[in-house]
Length: 479
Length: 159
Image 1 (cartoon, rainbow over the protein chains, first blue to last red):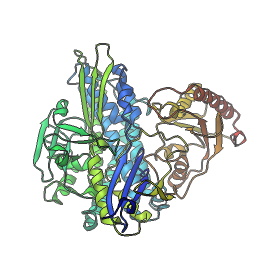
Image 2 (cartoon, helix red, strand yellow; image 1 turned 90 degrees about the horizontal axis):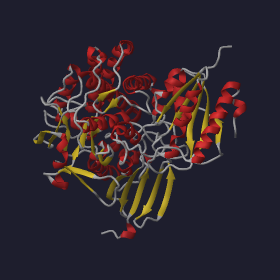
Image 3 (tube, each protein chain N blue to C red; image 1 turned 180 degrees about the horizontal axis):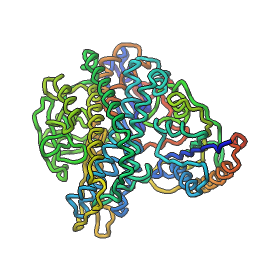
């Protein structure tokens, strides 16, 4: 057995193309065999204290400060929680459809960014390719058509957000009990003009993701993969619903662990565990315990948990996806990309349906009710299930906030993926940048995001450090 | 000669103290209503900013600076065509990459500058700039208003 002196630690810090401060540490013994591999992400829990003492109606705006990449998800989850605080269980049809349009715009732009500009360099150039070309500028040079599609799909989603939420940095569209504006006919018509193009590009992206997965299945199937539970919101009829629903959890074989659970009672079903080596908590399903109860969220989980998708092209794609594993849940980590593109197409289909709905021009924007002390809001953010939970005192001040963000839900799965890839690809060989990128490819499949990191000029260097088990620096490389 | 179309993008997180310098400057400049100036702000730069950049003749990226000249620096910016040394580090991209993408994808050759406003406090969740950072931002605002009116950006470079 190796002594502590003989063990070496490889640290990748921060993880490239992951928001915030990520660090992978890989512990090697004297034969360069992987003894342990972990993903640490610094999560700033201070944010929950930041909103305490603030008036509840400010929260949907304040929480956007949590994340520069998915502020709309936090905005809407907080607004849903505040609906409950103001005593509203059902907002008006116009308000719900405006919020949904905002949310599908968010999902569209987020999935487009991830696929075209974060994941495609790995897919197009290979995991081992020179990092000087394996990046978004490399994609732009070699595959400009794809890069333009990514930019324009994202821009379309961002414009939908701007039209429904207001400014990117001060979005105020969703308010407790509803929304503060509808969508004008002129705004709607601007979006309708480009819709066919967005649909065509979404179909193309789905085809790339599907073909890549199927053609490389032998390699991808074991890559960072493992059986797991899956969790998501689900509509009452079993359809995928990214904005609202009840909680469903299934095991790796598809057996339901719980179903149609009112998310206000999430505390009865989900528990967060603390581990000393990570700032990020590890949620698990209470009835199964921490060892068996961890689960995946996000596109893969949602496509697995849904009985069907209520838009025709995405549903046809879901059936193809399900056929790959004979209708059982797909537990291949790299299949996240395919599932994500099914949702991209679904989002465009939903946007099309919404834009043609006259309720978007309705005038009934806000519903009122009798004040409550507590509110929980959940939705399916691009990266997975997002929990917002608040308590408010009689002076309208927030006295308790608890957030479980999508990436926290995927904490254990990402760690499993890192460990699997490290053991399969890094053990007993000389570790190169390309091999380290294999670890990052597995993490990127989950599209983690913790953008609470300050990104002022001069920050975010990428450093690989080789340390012994006592933390002594042996070698340091700036990638 | 037609007036140049100028774009100012101020970026950063206003919930992290002085990281909000870019958006704060953007808000100040928007209030100026200067002809020919478009103003945008966001938490960070992303790929679609390349499309907006390509629709202008000159772009100024305004961000908080952790170090360097006080109260701000103003430097020319060139596209980085070979990507970062080690790839892109987040969902966001660097200003040099936005320029590269504008050229590569939309065949735009845009004159570009970075306005780095010195900040001091970044490490906690709190709205509002520190006193010194706020003073630096106002100095940067006055500088930018003057420079846009005079139109000679190259001559305004600080270092």
